[in-house]
Length: 134
Image (cartoon, rainbow, N blue to C red; front, top):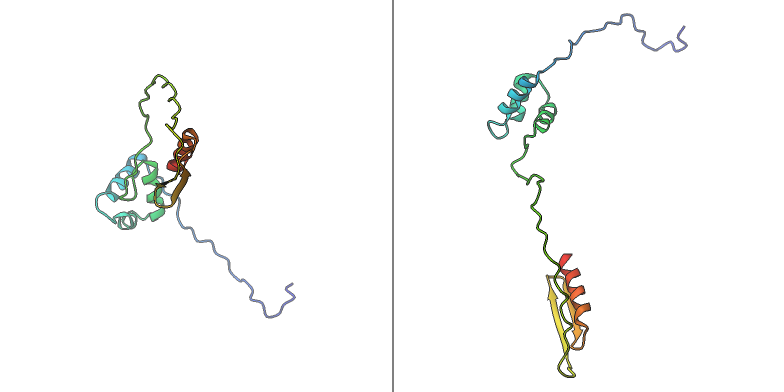
């Protein structure tokens, strides 16, 4: 017995059948997907026409490999590789005489390197390569 006197009692409980799940063949799915690609912004109208959700149609489009947006991104692909012989190391650069002064090197918009004229060129080259990769 219910201890709360003001609670509603369920007198009748009814199960309403919503129908069985529809099964779509791959050919039917492909036909619907191709129809959704016919015009821009046709996803919602196509989904309503067939009685499916918009998200299900987008899932089908992804599974068939169709792009859902206008921004085409390049597909991953193999790049031909070429084996090149090793280059001999560049001879070290030596200065003809004692130099004085400073050198300013601007890399991009945010990087600036100021070095003395007697800087080690190999080390400077490595620093500049790192800055260019950023």
